[in-house]
Length: 133
Image (cartoon, rainbow, N blue to C red):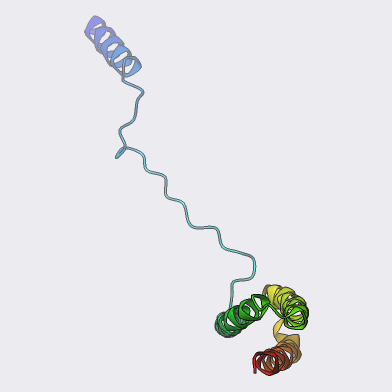
């Protein structure tokens, strides 16, 4: 009987040693949670990001219209009109650079930034309108 136990133990030991080491996809599944930032955005931050994005879109649309008007001025045969177009283009480019910093504007300084960009864009539109008359 002891020989039977020894044979049985040997069979069991050799059986587990010959086991296939590859795992099927369903055998072991590792689930990972998405990495969370140390400070998740609040609803207020999401709202501010949306406000900032909407404002940028509206200002870019206005700049596109100004671009078309300046391009029309630049094609003029009149040298003075071409010089005016060049000055307006420089103002427009400076304003676009200011608008490019919108992603860095904090909520605390937003009102000042928005007022400044809006004021500068209004003035540029007035200057372009005066030049195209």
